[in-house]
Length: 158
Figure: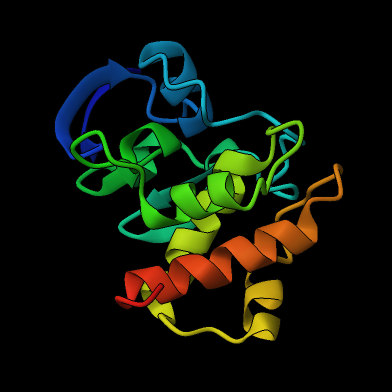
């Protein structure tokens, strides 16, 4: 049975009629064309499908769309504001913190959630905070450096 699901998507009020058990990842990709959210493992393990739900990192491959009713969902496409990259996105560019780029959206959104909770993480806290997002390319050191630099920029430093 289909239902009306209302939520905020990338800062815009959104409404759709769908099966409430439809997985959020597929709604984002197939109904809204937001393909930055990646399908990786399909079991919530790799982090490629990570989005922000009310500023918390969440695995969209395991989440029925009904779970976001009344909430705010941000995908990688909605992170930039007024045509300007979010500081974490910019830091990933500046540090070349990607290779294939498949894990990048999930890494960035996980990092944004981490920095909202802890605006001055230590290197170890960054490592621990990103531990559940897998990257097979070997860009880990650059990713950690990028998140550290983004934290400084977000606090007004350089």
